[in-house]
Length: 103
Figure 1 (cartoon, helix red, strand yellow):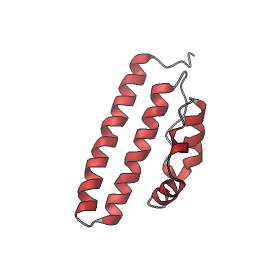
Figure 2: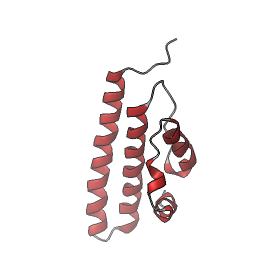
Figure 3: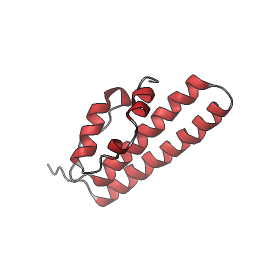
């Protein structure tokens, strides 16, 4: 069984994750602007999660399990490091600590 991931598969899955992440982002902004804080933060955390997963998918060399949520942030961070694209080191640690509490 071939464990490689094709360019087309990367494109479709990555595009799908970015599209969903963007929709969650827009919905989160709407909710936060209308003082629905818990709902807005929940969608904001799923938006960040989907963008991170898209980075993983676009840089995968072979199929991997990446369907972790931010409550298992260390697993996502390990995958980002594995694909040499761990952008989370540039973010404020407080950001991820707070956003993972929203789940």
